[in-house]
Length: 368
Image 1 (tube, rainbow, N blue to C red):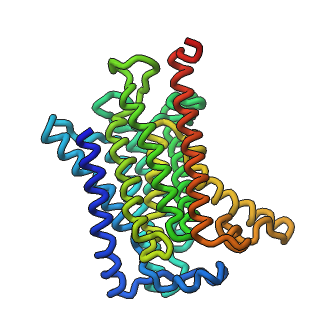
Image 2: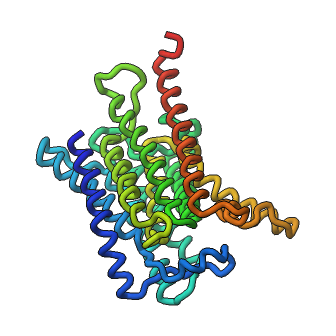
Protein backbone atom coordinates (compact mmCIF):
# COMPACT_ATOMS: atom_id res chain seq x y z
CA UNK A 1 0.00 0.00 0.00
CA UNK A 2 2.87 2.39 0.77
CA UNK A 3 4.34 1.70 -2.67
CA UNK A 4 0.99 2.59 -4.25
CA UNK A 5 0.77 5.84 -2.28
CA UNK A 6 4.33 6.78 -3.31
CA UNK A 7 3.48 6.20 -6.96
CA UNK A 8 0.32 8.31 -6.66
CA UNK A 9 2.12 11.20 -4.97
CA UNK A 10 4.96 11.25 -7.48
CA UNK A 11 2.57 11.17 -10.43
CA UNK A 12 0.51 14.00 -8.95
CA UNK A 13 3.55 16.17 -8.17
CA UNK A 14 5.02 15.63 -11.65
CA UNK A 15 1.80 16.75 -13.36
CA UNK A 16 1.09 19.68 -11.03
CA UNK A 17 4.67 20.99 -11.23
CA UNK A 18 5.63 19.84 -14.72
CA UNK A 19 2.57 21.04 -16.62
CA UNK A 20 3.02 24.80 -15.99
CA UNK A 21 6.71 24.42 -16.84
CA UNK A 22 5.74 22.77 -20.14
CA UNK A 23 3.15 25.50 -20.83
CA UNK A 24 5.85 28.17 -20.53
CA UNK A 25 8.23 26.19 -22.76
CA UNK A 26 5.60 25.58 -25.44
CA UNK A 27 4.63 29.27 -25.37
CA UNK A 28 8.28 30.22 -25.85
CA UNK A 29 8.58 27.83 -28.80
CA UNK A 30 5.19 28.90 -30.24
CA UNK A 31 3.98 25.29 -30.36
CA UNK A 32 0.27 26.02 -30.28
CA UNK A 33 -2.67 23.86 -31.33
CA UNK A 34 -4.13 24.22 -34.82
CA UNK A 35 -7.90 23.79 -34.90
CA UNK A 36 -9.80 21.79 -37.55
CA UNK A 37 -11.57 24.25 -39.83
CA UNK A 38 -14.71 22.12 -40.18
CA UNK A 39 -15.23 21.91 -36.41
CA UNK A 40 -17.54 24.06 -34.27
CA UNK A 41 -16.80 27.75 -34.82
CA UNK A 42 -16.64 28.27 -31.04
CA UNK A 43 -13.41 26.24 -31.05
CA UNK A 44 -11.53 28.70 -33.26
CA UNK A 45 -10.70 30.81 -30.19
CA UNK A 46 -8.60 27.84 -28.96
CA UNK A 47 -6.13 28.26 -31.80
CA UNK A 48 -2.66 28.71 -30.39
CA UNK A 49 -3.36 27.01 -27.06
CA UNK A 50 -0.21 25.09 -26.01
CA UNK A 51 -0.23 21.41 -26.91
CA UNK A 52 2.07 18.43 -26.18
CA UNK A 53 0.69 18.16 -22.62
CA UNK A 54 0.78 14.39 -22.99
CA UNK A 55 4.54 14.57 -22.44
CA UNK A 56 3.92 15.42 -18.78
CA UNK A 57 1.16 12.80 -18.41
CA UNK A 58 3.36 10.04 -19.83
CA UNK A 59 6.38 10.89 -17.69
CA UNK A 60 4.18 11.28 -14.60
CA UNK A 61 2.93 7.72 -15.05
CA UNK A 62 6.41 6.40 -15.79
CA UNK A 63 8.07 8.19 -12.85
CA UNK A 64 5.22 7.33 -10.49
CA UNK A 65 5.58 3.63 -11.27
CA UNK A 66 9.40 3.83 -11.15
CA UNK A 67 9.39 5.45 -7.70
CA UNK A 68 6.99 2.76 -6.46
CA UNK A 69 9.18 0.03 -7.95
CA UNK A 70 12.30 1.56 -6.37
CA UNK A 71 10.64 1.58 -2.95
CA UNK A 72 9.59 -2.06 -3.29
CA UNK A 73 13.09 -3.04 -4.38
CA UNK A 74 14.78 -1.24 -1.47
CA UNK A 75 12.18 -2.41 1.04
CA UNK A 76 11.73 -6.06 0.08
CA UNK A 77 14.01 -6.78 -2.87
CA UNK A 78 11.16 -7.03 -5.40
CA UNK A 79 12.35 -6.39 -8.95
CA UNK A 80 10.09 -4.78 -11.57
CA UNK A 81 7.92 -7.25 -13.45
CA UNK A 82 8.07 -7.86 -17.17
CA UNK A 83 4.30 -7.39 -17.35
CA UNK A 84 4.62 -3.82 -16.06
CA UNK A 85 7.60 -3.03 -18.30
CA UNK A 86 5.74 -4.26 -21.39
CA UNK A 87 2.58 -2.32 -20.52
CA UNK A 88 4.66 0.82 -20.09
CA UNK A 89 6.43 0.08 -23.38
CA UNK A 90 3.03 0.01 -25.10
CA UNK A 91 2.15 3.37 -23.54
CA UNK A 92 5.46 5.11 -24.25
CA UNK A 93 5.81 3.77 -27.80
CA UNK A 94 2.34 5.02 -28.73
CA UNK A 95 3.20 8.28 -26.96
CA UNK A 96 6.31 8.67 -29.12
CA UNK A 97 4.19 8.12 -32.21
CA UNK A 98 1.76 10.75 -30.96
CA UNK A 99 4.63 13.16 -30.25
CA UNK A 100 5.88 12.81 -33.82
CA UNK A 101 2.33 13.52 -35.04
CA UNK A 102 1.96 16.57 -32.78
CA UNK A 103 5.39 17.91 -33.71
CA UNK A 104 4.57 17.55 -37.41
CA UNK A 105 1.39 19.58 -36.87
CA UNK A 106 3.11 22.50 -35.18
CA UNK A 107 5.94 22.50 -37.72
CA UNK A 108 3.50 22.46 -40.66
CA UNK A 109 1.27 25.00 -38.87
CA UNK A 110 -1.87 22.97 -39.64
CA UNK A 111 -4.10 20.33 -38.05
CA UNK A 112 -2.65 17.48 -40.11
CA UNK A 113 0.42 15.67 -38.82
CA UNK A 114 1.54 12.17 -39.76
CA UNK A 115 -0.11 10.57 -42.77
CA UNK A 116 -2.62 7.80 -42.13
CA UNK A 117 -0.15 5.29 -43.60
CA UNK A 118 2.70 6.59 -41.45
CA UNK A 119 0.65 6.36 -38.27
CA UNK A 120 -0.59 2.87 -39.17
CA UNK A 121 2.93 1.60 -39.85
CA UNK A 122 4.17 3.00 -36.54
CA UNK A 123 1.29 1.44 -34.61
CA UNK A 124 1.83 -1.89 -36.37
CA UNK A 125 5.54 -2.00 -35.50
CA UNK A 126 5.10 -1.08 -31.83
CA UNK A 127 2.00 -3.24 -31.29
CA UNK A 128 3.71 -6.24 -32.88
CA UNK A 129 6.79 -5.86 -30.68
CA UNK A 130 4.57 -5.65 -27.59
CA UNK A 131 2.46 -8.66 -28.64
CA UNK A 132 5.41 -10.97 -29.33
CA UNK A 133 7.29 -10.04 -26.15
CA UNK A 134 4.17 -10.26 -23.96
CA UNK A 135 3.46 -13.75 -25.24
CA UNK A 136 6.99 -15.17 -25.20
CA UNK A 137 8.92 -13.59 -22.31
CA UNK A 138 8.57 -15.68 -19.13
CA UNK A 139 7.49 -13.92 -15.94
CA UNK A 140 8.65 -14.43 -12.37
CA UNK A 141 5.16 -15.59 -11.30
CA UNK A 142 4.92 -18.18 -14.05
CA UNK A 143 1.67 -16.71 -15.30
CA UNK A 144 1.65 -15.20 -18.81
CA UNK A 145 1.77 -11.46 -19.42
CA UNK A 146 -0.69 -12.19 -22.19
CA UNK A 147 -2.80 -15.13 -23.35
CA UNK A 148 -3.02 -16.30 -26.96
CA UNK A 149 -6.75 -15.80 -27.07
CA UNK A 150 -9.65 -13.45 -26.43
CA UNK A 151 -10.93 -13.04 -22.87
CA UNK A 152 -13.98 -11.46 -21.29
CA UNK A 153 -12.66 -11.95 -17.76
CA UNK A 154 -9.47 -13.95 -17.08
CA UNK A 155 -10.01 -17.19 -19.03
CA UNK A 156 -10.05 -16.97 -22.87
CA UNK A 157 -13.44 -17.82 -24.36
CA UNK A 158 -11.66 -18.19 -27.71
CA UNK A 159 -8.12 -19.57 -27.76
CA UNK A 160 -5.74 -19.20 -30.70
CA UNK A 161 -3.86 -22.35 -29.69
CA UNK A 162 -6.16 -24.53 -31.80
CA UNK A 163 -3.99 -23.66 -34.83
CA UNK A 164 -0.62 -24.56 -33.32
CA UNK A 165 1.97 -22.35 -31.61
CA UNK A 166 3.30 -20.48 -34.64
CA UNK A 167 -0.12 -19.62 -36.06
CA UNK A 168 -1.47 -18.72 -32.61
CA UNK A 169 1.31 -16.12 -32.26
CA UNK A 170 0.39 -14.63 -35.64
CA UNK A 171 -3.30 -14.52 -34.72
CA UNK A 172 -2.44 -12.91 -31.39
CA UNK A 173 -0.32 -10.27 -33.12
CA UNK A 174 -3.28 -9.43 -35.38
CA UNK A 175 -5.60 -9.25 -32.35
CA UNK A 176 -3.24 -6.95 -30.43
CA UNK A 177 -2.82 -4.70 -33.47
CA UNK A 178 -6.60 -4.40 -33.69
CA UNK A 179 -6.88 -3.52 -29.99
CA UNK A 180 -4.07 -0.96 -30.11
CA UNK A 181 -5.45 0.71 -33.22
CA UNK A 182 -9.01 0.71 -31.90
CA UNK A 183 -8.27 2.10 -28.44
CA UNK A 184 -5.69 4.70 -29.51
CA UNK A 185 -8.08 6.08 -32.12
CA UNK A 186 -11.03 5.94 -29.70
CA UNK A 187 -9.20 7.96 -27.01
CA UNK A 188 -7.89 10.32 -29.70
CA UNK A 189 -11.46 11.00 -30.90
CA UNK A 190 -12.57 11.60 -27.30
CA UNK A 191 -9.91 14.28 -26.92
CA UNK A 192 -12.00 16.97 -28.57
CA UNK A 193 -13.21 19.15 -25.69
CA UNK A 194 -11.41 20.74 -22.75
CA UNK A 195 -10.97 18.11 -20.06
CA UNK A 196 -13.05 15.42 -21.76
CA UNK A 197 -10.29 12.87 -22.43
CA UNK A 198 -8.37 13.65 -19.22
CA UNK A 199 -11.42 13.36 -16.98
CA UNK A 200 -12.86 10.24 -18.61
CA UNK A 201 -9.42 8.60 -18.62
CA UNK A 202 -9.06 9.36 -14.91
CA UNK A 203 -12.31 7.47 -14.31
CA UNK A 204 -11.48 4.60 -16.69
CA UNK A 205 -8.01 3.94 -15.27
CA UNK A 206 -9.38 4.04 -11.73
CA UNK A 207 -11.64 1.19 -12.83
CA UNK A 208 -8.66 -0.74 -14.18
CA UNK A 209 -6.84 -0.10 -10.91
CA UNK A 210 -9.70 -1.67 -8.92
CA UNK A 211 -9.74 -4.71 -11.23
CA UNK A 212 -5.98 -5.24 -11.09
CA UNK A 213 -5.94 -4.80 -7.30
CA UNK A 214 -8.72 -7.37 -6.88
CA UNK A 215 -6.77 -9.78 -9.08
CA UNK A 216 -3.64 -9.24 -6.99
CA UNK A 217 -5.63 -9.91 -3.81
CA UNK A 218 -6.98 -13.15 -5.29
CA UNK A 219 -3.93 -14.30 -7.23
CA UNK A 220 -3.69 -18.02 -7.98
CA UNK A 221 -1.58 -19.69 -5.32
CA UNK A 222 -2.47 -17.09 -2.69
CA UNK A 223 -4.18 -17.67 0.65
CA UNK A 224 -7.44 -15.80 0.00
CA UNK A 225 -10.62 -17.73 -0.58
CA UNK A 226 -12.82 -17.67 -3.65
CA UNK A 227 -11.91 -17.70 -7.29
CA UNK A 228 -8.26 -16.92 -8.09
CA UNK A 229 -6.67 -15.34 -11.15
CA UNK A 230 -3.69 -16.59 -13.19
CA UNK A 231 -2.53 -13.05 -14.00
CA UNK A 232 1.09 -11.94 -14.03
CA UNK A 233 2.05 -9.33 -11.40
CA UNK A 234 -1.33 -7.57 -11.06
CA UNK A 235 -0.07 -5.44 -8.18
CA UNK A 236 2.42 -3.79 -10.55
CA UNK A 237 -0.46 -3.24 -12.99
CA UNK A 238 -2.48 -1.67 -10.18
CA UNK A 239 0.25 0.88 -9.57
CA UNK A 240 0.43 1.78 -13.27
CA UNK A 241 -3.36 2.14 -13.61
CA UNK A 242 -3.68 4.32 -10.50
CA UNK A 243 -0.68 6.44 -11.51
CA UNK A 244 -2.40 6.98 -14.87
CA UNK A 245 -5.62 8.04 -13.13
CA UNK A 246 -3.73 10.44 -10.84
CA UNK A 247 -1.68 11.86 -13.74
CA UNK A 248 -4.90 12.62 -15.61
CA UNK A 249 -6.35 14.14 -12.43
CA UNK A 250 -3.36 16.46 -12.03
CA UNK A 251 -3.36 17.39 -15.72
CA UNK A 252 -7.07 18.22 -15.49
CA UNK A 253 -6.18 21.18 -13.25
CA UNK A 254 -4.73 22.89 -16.34
CA UNK A 255 -6.83 21.16 -19.01
CA UNK A 256 -10.31 21.98 -17.68
CA UNK A 257 -12.33 24.59 -19.55
CA UNK A 258 -10.88 26.95 -20.65
CA UNK A 259 -7.83 24.76 -21.19
CA UNK A 260 -4.37 26.21 -20.62
CA UNK A 261 -2.84 23.25 -22.49
CA UNK A 262 -3.99 20.27 -24.57
CA UNK A 263 -2.65 16.73 -24.18
CA UNK A 264 -2.41 16.30 -27.96
CA UNK A 265 -1.84 12.98 -29.68
CA UNK A 266 1.20 12.55 -27.40
CA UNK A 267 -1.24 11.97 -24.57
CA UNK A 268 -4.27 10.45 -26.27
CA UNK A 269 -2.34 7.79 -28.21
CA UNK A 270 -0.30 6.91 -25.12
CA UNK A 271 -3.41 6.59 -22.95
CA UNK A 272 -5.12 4.51 -25.64
CA UNK A 273 -2.09 2.22 -25.87
CA UNK A 274 -2.00 1.91 -22.08
CA UNK A 275 -5.71 1.10 -21.96
CA UNK A 276 -5.30 -1.63 -24.58
CA UNK A 277 -2.23 -3.10 -22.87
CA UNK A 278 -3.90 -3.15 -19.45
CA UNK A 279 -6.90 -4.98 -20.91
CA UNK A 280 -4.52 -7.60 -22.33
CA UNK A 281 -2.39 -7.88 -19.17
CA UNK A 282 -5.41 -8.21 -16.84
CA UNK A 283 -7.10 -10.61 -19.31
CA UNK A 284 -10.19 -8.41 -19.65
CA UNK A 285 -10.13 -7.45 -23.34
CA UNK A 286 -13.91 -7.68 -23.78
CA UNK A 287 -14.81 -6.28 -20.36
CA UNK A 288 -12.75 -3.25 -21.40
CA UNK A 289 -15.38 -2.49 -24.05
CA UNK A 290 -17.74 -1.70 -21.15
CA UNK A 291 -15.06 -0.16 -18.94
CA UNK A 292 -14.12 2.25 -21.74
CA UNK A 293 -17.70 2.67 -22.89
CA UNK A 294 -17.40 6.39 -23.52
CA UNK A 295 -14.43 5.82 -25.85
CA UNK A 296 -16.48 3.21 -27.72
CA UNK A 297 -19.43 5.60 -27.96
CA UNK A 298 -17.24 8.34 -29.41
CA UNK A 299 -15.55 6.03 -31.92
CA UNK A 300 -18.80 4.39 -33.04
CA UNK A 301 -20.47 7.76 -33.59
CA UNK A 302 -17.68 8.62 -36.01
CA UNK A 303 -17.94 5.26 -37.79
CA UNK A 304 -21.73 5.57 -38.08
CA UNK A 305 -21.53 9.14 -39.35
CA UNK A 306 -18.98 8.34 -42.05
CA UNK A 307 -20.61 5.06 -43.10
CA UNK A 308 -24.14 6.46 -43.26
CA UNK A 309 -23.00 9.55 -45.17
CA UNK A 310 -21.22 7.42 -47.77
CA UNK A 311 -24.37 5.35 -48.28
CA UNK A 312 -27.02 8.09 -48.21
CA UNK A 313 -25.17 11.45 -48.36
CA UNK A 314 -27.06 12.33 -45.17
CA UNK A 315 -25.82 12.73 -41.61
CA UNK A 316 -27.01 10.94 -38.48
CA UNK A 317 -25.42 13.51 -36.17
CA UNK A 318 -24.97 17.25 -36.61
CA UNK A 319 -21.24 16.55 -36.32
CA UNK A 320 -19.08 13.63 -35.25
CA UNK A 321 -17.64 12.59 -32.87
CA UNK A 322 -20.82 12.76 -30.84
CA UNK A 323 -19.62 15.37 -28.33
CA UNK A 324 -19.71 17.93 -31.17
CA UNK A 325 -23.30 16.90 -31.94
CA UNK A 326 -24.42 18.02 -28.50
CA UNK A 327 -22.40 21.22 -28.75
CA UNK A 328 -24.25 22.11 -31.94
CA UNK A 329 -27.55 21.28 -30.23
CA UNK A 330 -26.82 24.14 -27.85
CA UNK A 331 -25.15 22.45 -24.87
CA UNK A 332 -22.23 24.40 -23.43
CA UNK A 333 -18.83 22.73 -23.67
CA UNK A 334 -18.64 22.34 -19.89
CA UNK A 335 -22.08 20.67 -19.76
CA UNK A 336 -21.11 18.19 -22.47
CA UNK A 337 -17.85 17.32 -20.68
CA UNK A 338 -19.38 16.85 -17.22
CA UNK A 339 -22.28 14.78 -18.56
CA UNK A 340 -19.91 12.61 -20.58
CA UNK A 341 -17.80 12.08 -17.43
CA UNK A 342 -20.98 10.91 -15.72
CA UNK A 343 -21.66 8.50 -18.59
CA UNK A 344 -18.13 7.08 -18.34
CA UNK A 345 -18.55 6.69 -14.57
CA UNK A 346 -21.73 4.67 -15.19
CA UNK A 347 -19.84 2.45 -17.66
CA UNK A 348 -17.03 1.87 -15.14
CA UNK A 349 -19.45 1.05 -12.32
CA UNK A 350 -21.27 -1.38 -14.64
CA UNK A 351 -17.98 -3.05 -15.61
CA UNK A 352 -16.91 -3.38 -11.97
CA UNK A 353 -20.31 -4.83 -11.06
CA UNK A 354 -19.97 -7.42 -13.84
CA UNK A 355 -16.39 -8.18 -12.78
CA UNK A 356 -17.37 -8.70 -9.15
CA UNK A 357 -20.46 -10.69 -10.12
CA UNK A 358 -18.25 -12.97 -12.21
CA UNK A 359 -15.94 -13.52 -9.22
CA UNK A 360 -18.88 -14.29 -6.92
CA UNK A 361 -20.34 -16.72 -9.45
CA UNK A 362 -17.03 -18.53 -10.08
CA UNK A 363 -16.37 -18.66 -6.34
CA UNK A 364 -19.67 -20.49 -5.80
CA UNK A 365 -20.92 -17.76 -3.49
CA UNK A 366 -23.95 -16.67 -5.53
CA UNK A 367 -26.50 -18.70 -3.54
CA UNK A 368 -24.50 -19.31 -0.39
